[in-house]
Length: 186
Image 1 (cartoon, rainbow, N blue to C red):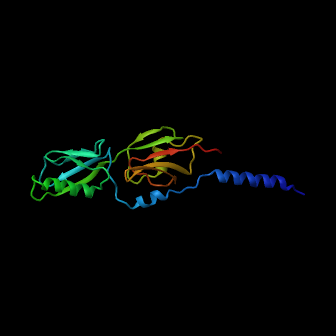
Image 2: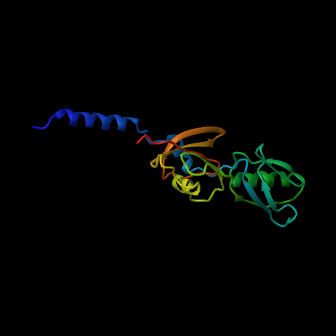
């Protein structure tokens, strides 16, 4: 007759290990999936003012969250969508410079993202549209042998605040994200 002691011990160990695994949830990020992209420092923008070649150029969002354009000076870009920035530039140009300005703003280069923790090459990397956490890890040279392969911790700027959450490895990356791959225990 088989002893129940080893079976109970194995069951207790399995429950203990399962209790150590983090719950993968990030409800604070759920709303942001559908929200328009918000500009921030490090983004490079292609601004086209139709009929005004001397104003059309690529502008970088500086550390204070602004772009600086000829004639109108600094325009706040931080936290705005490209459409909101278009309207702000049009309003500034309309106030004494152009009669009916038409402006187009698109992101020329997104701000970089960062990967830290149990990856081969931690660091800063250029953002590519459609990336997932797993793609970001691949860009960082892959997992180390101890890297947790099922989830990642991500810190993201949302509404002017840094928010950190645990997400599945298939979760989408946004520009400016800081991804941390934790060490696994087993």
